[in-house]
Length: 279
Ligand SMILES: NC(=O)c1ccc[n+]([C@@H]2O[C@H](COP(=O)([O-])OP(=O)(O)OC[C@H]3O[C@@H](n4cnc5c(N)ncnc54)[C@H](O)[C@@H]3O)[C@@H](O)[C@H]2O)c1
Image (cartoon, rainbow, N blue to C red; front, side, top):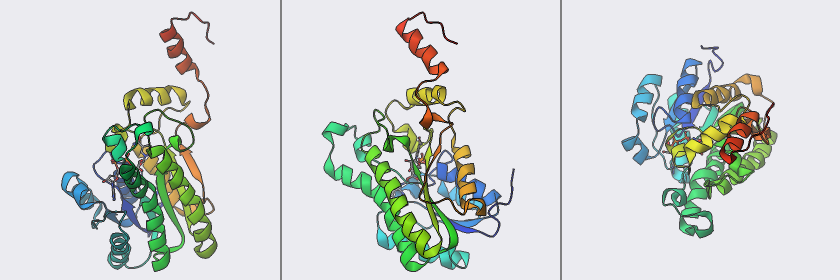
């Protein structure tokens, strides 16, 4: 259903790889809600992913960029303003990658070159994006910038590895830049902390199927999927959330405030073969 929440708004969406990507779902929903936008991803992702299909569907141009490269980001913002006819109103950073995870280097045996890349791709690229946009004055007053985070930024999640450090940094950047962007330009900067979701990046997390079952049982509303995350992003890009900034917003069915749930307790007790009365 469309509420035309983004009618007349312009944006840039980074990180759509295939239809499972959170950014893909955001692009489809933003299109339905009346926004116009450009898409960006790495040249490699453009070769291996399906982003051209998305561009056609949403009448968008693709601007290739490595989000760790400031010149590339300069080009994305400059070209987006040319194509869209002025400053943008929203930006989505939906980017994450860890070579330590990919190459199965555990947290107490990290490769530090990989760690540098994890932090640069998954967190510092957000600062680079914000700084490029700020210097270029590329975002309209009351604009909204979002990045996607995960609860492992706050609490240890086995197997999330150096991505936990990247997410902690990402959330800190949202707060620090959010203060400056709010003070100087009335622009809001937030992160959304999403449930585990079966995407290309999500599938890289160790034991993701078990993790998703666990978080689903723990969350009173169940896991949030990629489309539900996209809907939350749309609200955050809309004018209905103008005074929300510098926040890490949990979008996880309640998981982040749970300690133990009935549905999890049942499974746990069964695995221990304990005959407990559970109400
Ligand atoms: N899937 C989950 O369980 C989950 C949960 C919480 C948060 N997130 C976050 O959501 C965001 C999107 O991930 P997703 O789950 O949609 O997976 P995805 O694999 O579809 O998206 C990750 C994107 O990052 C892009 N990327 C990687 N390196 C890049 C670079 N150097 N420059 C530009 N782009 C680059 C990839 O091409 C890809 O499009 C990530 O920040 C991820 O950490 C995912």
